[in-house]
Structures are given as structure tokens and as C-alpha cells.
Length: 276
Ligand code: C2E
Ligand code: MG
Ligand code: MG
Ligand code: MG
Image (cartoon, rainbow, N blue to C red; front, side, top):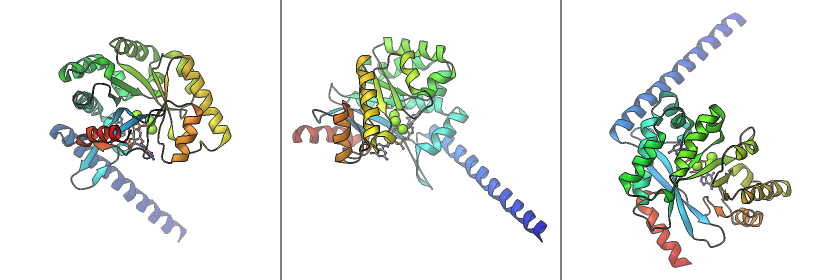
């Protein structure tokens, strides 16, 4: 009897695996088609100056409105794009599209684009950046690339030299999701980041004195190396107050705005200016 149950469990499990694999394969096929047909979009989330309450720029975030499944989150399709190499054409597209959008914003607005570690493993990222800037007619100073420490983990020397070349164009480099990795602090010594983005997991706990002390320490480190500090995922005014007291210079999160469709970004800036 136990044997039969075991067999059934086994068969059930296999079917479950098959279903998951089939679904994943279908998603990959759909993603390939979406990349080909231009079926992805960028949303733009405002990044606010903490002291002035003004918009300093926007982070571009990929969106995939799937014809049957609805919105597929980046946490699902970015890993597939990375494993299949689709992140290369997608990443190029995001750079071009983000620069094109930013060229239509007021002069002081920057755009931040997330760049995957896979894009650093292939040659051509620098050319891709140069191409996107010149196609849009956007000054390099208005583009910022967001990378995570995984970029520096793989082949640190090659990645650092690519980053330095891109930075010498005038493009800013931000370290994203700071504090979530294995040895975040050591990466600050390896590259002169222009910005550090403190991960949301610290912000949700900012009312805890120890967490607040850590955030203050990160701000201190950043200031010494000339990096601006952004708090990610600020959702409440208490969190906003907490990160302001800790010295974060920029804030981003649902409290100010969710990521917006491209055509609403300029309207948000204008609303903010009128309110100020
Ligand atoms: P990330 O770069 O750290 O982006 C911040 C994420 O936090 C975004 O999720 C954003 O929508 C979300 N967020 C912003 N404010 C709040 C808040 O107040 N509360 C909460 N709970 N979340 C908030 P999203 O858009 O789902 O993107 C997730 C991740 O996917 C990004 O994390 C980034 O790592 C990756 N990603 C998105 N777009 C791209 C892209 O164009 N290229 C690459 N390589 N990765 C991307
Ligand atoms: Mg980011
Ligand atoms: Mg982040
Ligand atoms: Mg994140």
C-alpha cells in the first residue's frame, strides 16, 4: 500500500515538474516573440530629492504585458531573458528607449537604467551605451546605469574596466540593492560609484535603531567617497522621515509614485513643480 502511494506521489511529482517545465518553455517562446515584435514597455518611477521634494530623475523599469497572462513581473522574465541571452537585445532596447524618453524631459532630469551582469560578460555594452545616447541626442551626464554587486563578482577586472570606460563618457554608475549581497562593503573599494541605492529591506526596518544606525553608516561611507545615497522602496511618511534623518539624499518609492507609463512622467514633474 505504501509502495503504491509512493509510486503515485512520484508520478504526481513528475507531472508537476513537466507542467512547470512546459510553462517555462512557453514563457520563453512568448518572450522571444515579444522581444521580436516590440511587446515590452518601460515604466518610469520618479526619484526624488529628499530635501527639496523635487524630481531628480526616473528609473526605467521593464514591463511585459502578456497577451494571455496579463502583466508578467520582471522577477519572472528577467531571469529567463538572462539564461537565454535575450537580455542582450532587450537591454539594448531598454537603453535606447530610456534615453529617447529622457531627451523629451526637462534638462535637469536624469534617467537610470538597470543593467544585467550578462550584458557585462559580452563585448559591446560601451558601444550600446554610446549608440543609445547619440541616437537620442542625450548628454551622457543625464544617463545613469544601475548595477548590482553580482556584476563585480563574476569577472571583476573586466567589469571594472568596462565600467570605467563608460563612466569616462560622463555616464553615472549606481550600485543597486546595496546591503543584500554577500560582501557589499568590499565592492565600494573596487569601484568609484556615483550613487548607492540602499535596498528596501533596510527601509522597511528603518524604525529599528540598529537598522537606522547601519543606514547612517552607509551614508557616511558614501559621503566620504562622493556618492549620493538613495533610499529604495519608501512607502510611508514615517520611513521617509527615518531615511531623511539618516542622511539619505534621494528617495524613491510608492509614497511618492509607483512606476508610471512613459507619457505620465512629464506630467508628474509638472505637478510636482506646481506643488512646490
Ligand atoms: P530594482 O532595480 O531594485 O527596482 C526596484 C523595484 O522596486 C521595482 O520592481 C519597483 O517597481 C519596486 N518598487 C519601487 N518602489 C517600491 C515601494 O515603495 N515598495 C515596493 N514593495 N516596491 C517598490 P520591479 O519593477 O518589479 O523590478 C524588479 C527588478 O527587476 C528590479 O529591481 C531590477 O533588478 C529588475 N529589472 C527591472 N527592469 C529591468 C531592466 O530594464 N533591466 C534589468 N537588467 N533588470 C530590470
Ligand atoms: Mg534598479
Ligand atoms: Mg534596487
Ligand atoms: Mg531591488
